[in-house]
Length: 113
Image 1 (cartoon, rainbow, N blue to C red):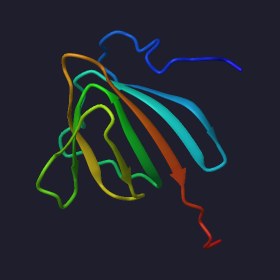
Image 2 (image 1 turned 90 degrees about the horizontal axis):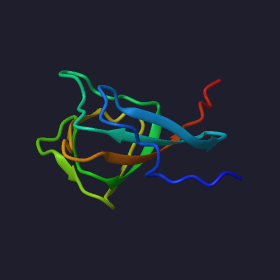
Image 3 (image 1 turned 180 degrees about the horizontal axis):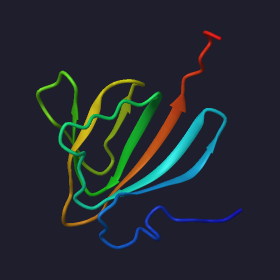
């Protein structure tokens, strides 16, 4: 057993988001994501083949979902359950402090085979 802390080793402000797989198992992947003012590139939408539960631990962020007009503003403690294949993008993250996310991806089995 190795004890770790979600706030440790978040690194300094970087051009790239830190996306780190911290745990997982059959059909599950748990990630820690650290953003410093990052956003999705213009015109880019996430379309994931997994359900994603996302919890904002620190900082703040704005998410936009396809077909929605309003940005969902997230503060520490806020969480969302994003269904697989739901198009979404990160409009902005806090530029003054790290935005730390905990993302849990659960993969949908393909029973068509």
